[in-house]
Image 1 (cartoon, each protein chain N blue to C red):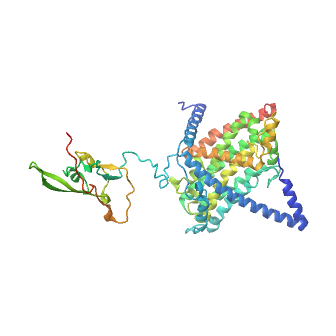
Image 2 (cartoon, rainbow over the protein chains, first blue to last red; image 1 turned 30 degrees about the vertical axis):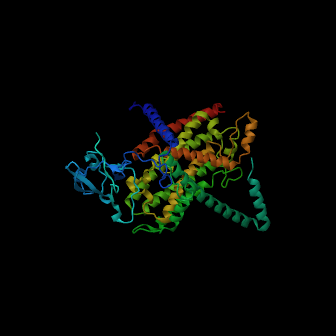
Image 3 (cartoon, rainbow over the protein chains, first blue to last red; image 1 turned 180 degrees about the horizontal axis):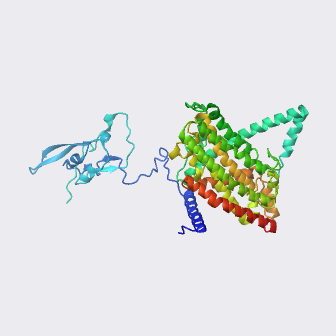
Length: 156
Length: 358
């Protein structure tokens, strides 16, 4: 950099202006990043870690991983999650907590991911599903466990 | 090359057969005026659309896509919106000057617009000091800007207007000097002669190094004269809301907007005329077959093609560089552009005297 000489600064300036023009010209021909949303629903690109809504993944046998420990409920900063559980007695006489209903209020969720971080069994996860608009607030209260589902057997 | 003066002469003869000469000329003037205004509005719409698309492409976006195919109707809708808006006069403005200012700006750009040689035989104003008149007429615009800022009774407006005054008056010097360089090479100030003199090669090629330097200087100064690009501090949104046209609404603002885009086109069209040969097709001496093929493309296609190419260059500049400070703008003009263009003028004079051009 030549800062005190008239012609030095002139040519430095011209060179840096040229760099700027080259950069914008390159940008002119790159692929545009605009997503034209409703039309491109099919090939819409959403980044993998985008947090759209909370889900509870079930396997083919309609089994989930939730052991109804309630850690997510405690971790949630604004009471979005309510875990309804019951005590059942297994065949060998042990008492065991079982999930009845996993209530999730989408309307008050702030998508902070504290619940999924707290979960010891990775029973809940955020999905990319983001088209959450409904006409009534009561429809935002979702039950995440599917009807008739039960907790998966412990992996050995 | 088709000569449009055949058509215009035929219309003139036809009108003369219907009415006395004075009336015929009056009717022709009205027709030409309406033609110019229509072309002006049409060009403004095309330019605004082009600006939005080009700007979007430079910023890795798509620009308007929703209204009409590829967003083509968008600008027309914007114009309709502008026409239906309330024209509001704020309290404490100097009513007469406030209402006069947009028309001063439009007047300047209409006068300049009328000088442009669109095609062979389609020059509206064409006389022996054409380029000189064009430079003089384009300077009236700054009066409108100063009036708008002064009469608005708003300190942001007056700051914008003063900046604009300082900037336009300064940059007119190097723009004029760049054009003067080309006048030295062309040997005439009449626009039509200047264009027909470029039949054997555009001036930017025949004048090689000094012509190229003059072209770059003219583009920089032209961008500054339009209050655009890195030199848009008369209407710096982030500092002065909208500068000198802050207090205008509806079509008052519309006129400023229109004039801004048309001035862009006019600057580009002057560059196309003076440097790139106006409506003259690309002729390469020695390649007669190629030259005849080029002659089949009509003159106005060449003209608008070149003008829009220069417009694109100016948009490229505008969307690449950040805004300058007022002291940087004046330093650029007085410490760099003016001395360089003076030396350049001298260089061109030497080259022309010694016959070193093509």
